[in-house]
Image 1: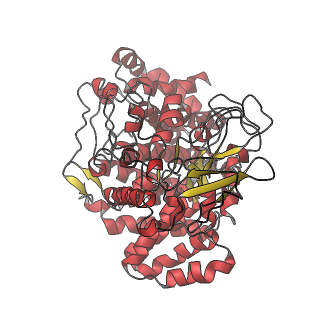
Image 2 (image 1 turned 90 degrees about the horizontal axis):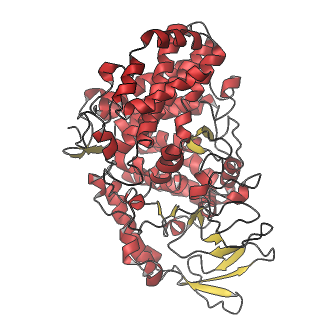
Length: 595
């Protein structure tokens, strides 16, 4: 099994340390012999394919750098400390530089993604050559899984850096250094790969391999292909501005047609579904339930004591307490106005937007107690240590996966593509399913039927954009969607204005209270609020033990509002390639975008 781990040499290859790399690459006989042994035996081949996922868990890869930063800041979520001047925060403020001190390391996400790609390339070659994939369905599944995992890495490279080197074969001395390739070339390869993978990867729960959302399944493969088709057919930044691709093979109608068919295939399969309750969906996620066939389609798997998703984004705990052995969470949260953009009876609101944190009760580990945060420090309530089945004890890691895609996104993509190709009414059934889950059945006549019935023309597209915001807040999907809609700067400017209106209690936030009253509930743990809802403006100081200023200028200053973005978002849709990789590229890499 040790030979399988040698695939990790890809990470070294990318860094440009050529002496040892060339020695490794000049040993084809041994490499070929190892591949013939590994990829002709299922258990060995499975171990190699499982190894493709290993770079996800590296500290400076997805675990500690990519997931905490890509996807912030948008019109719905931000880093709660984005006014901090450190390089860490430039990553989310559209102001990153190639020498960013958080990212400019040789073991960072860029290198780890290419390490995963190289592992996938070797597995794909080995399985095609030695796996008898035409006759062995288990080996065929491994090939489909390898193709899909490679597509995940490339999807994240392209959305983060735009045009990147295209490596779809294992590295040789001739291909050690490559320039950036057009993202169009990469999109076309990924769409073809996923089309093939969908023919050999089973549906959720169709086989034992697809019984867990930690392994890829056909619903996810098709969903990822739909997401990539929408990105390829949408807007993005090029050297000459933000525009659509000029590649005729990626024309908008063709790409949206692919997305619509893939989404409809998933819907028709009946192998995935919305969870009945929005809160139950997130309780299930926090409890590490990875059973396939529900709403989660695929998750980046983190071992116990390895992933940092709650450590980064859960409702903040200021000390060890009865729910966690680590004091963290709260790095990001919803923008302050988002709570007020939900209807009060929308079940998604109180799950998504949390106005409290867990106070410092150190050194006790037997109690926990909430305290309010300020207006500018909302928490993502989808992620909670207190919803875990067991108390988290690791210093930095909680083992919680990252939910890469869920069924609600399938419905939203179907609505978007149907609107584009078939008109406004064709999009409404998909929005209806999303909204029916969001509201109690008693509210459907107003919040579902009348709401959708009152929409026509471009208002339906606006509703899709809004529903995407309310449904997926805190899941790091918004930025890429705003880019493909050519709405990134427009929506971020709207968000800034909403912040100013909120703190001045003007415009659509005129009836948001300026004082928040709170008290501990009888359980001596959770808080009860007055002044959180619109119109709750009575003086309740006699009934509530404490109060804080809420929607007032001092709680949301100009500097904090303006750090939603610093650089022009439409000129900084992508991160720069970090300097260490440019310096190690033998002159092949630059930070110039292709035309």
